[in-house]
Image 1 (tube, each protein chain N blue to C red):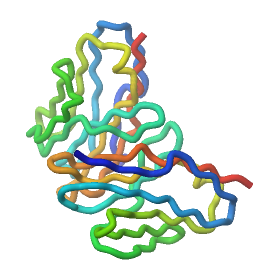
Image 2: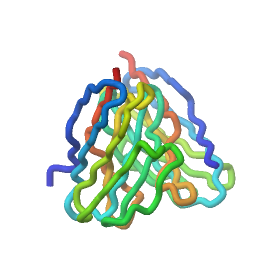
Image 3: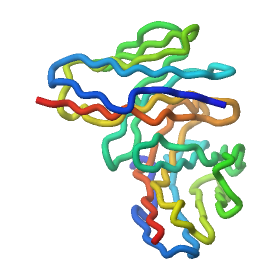
Amino acid sequence: GQNIDQPTEMTATEGAIVQINCTYQTSGFNGLFWYQQHAGEAPTFLSYNVLDGLEEKGRFSSFLSRSKGYSYLLLKELQMKDSASYLCAVPSGNTPLVFGKGTRLSVIA
Amino acid sequence: DTGVSQDPRHKITKRGQNVTFRCDPISEHNRLYWYRQTLGQGPEFLTYFQNEAQLEKSRLLSDRFSAERPKGSFSTLEIQRTEQGDSAMYLCASSDDRYYEQYFGPGTRLTVT
């Protein structure tokens, strides 16, 4: 089966940096995804990592270590609109994507 | 392209009734996915299609659930004899053959009373 762990909730201050961690267990690895989901809305794609290392995309960066089964999403210069759930997901066997439960991030002034 | 659309956006039904949801994917996408999401959880995979072929079904998809994509374009998800436990957001997503980037629709929120 597939096991994905991420913190349930995090709080950070506007303008700060926050790191959201994700650990996963999989028998075969085909990449790791991060999605953002605002309350009451659909998830939107943020990033995809298949190789080890850091990938930067504007204020958001995503890191992967395949040997450790670990990834993190780094959000810089936090804005109030970044308050959302952040979902870590991996393919597993014949299942296209298995999602974690998500990390609910609250950005406060 | 206006993205993935789903209809209806909200559905309230009584226990035991049948409901059907529709999803229209992004037109050039040949893969279509159905997920279910409850409060505080991530989306749970239900099933997916490549063109009109249904390639995978989750164990979550009991025999009361059926999905079709008859012409490889839009898809329908039917739930028969609804139960209160079926109350959830039903999300549809689509992608091209590089399935890693799935585009989600706004979802259909089902409430079973």
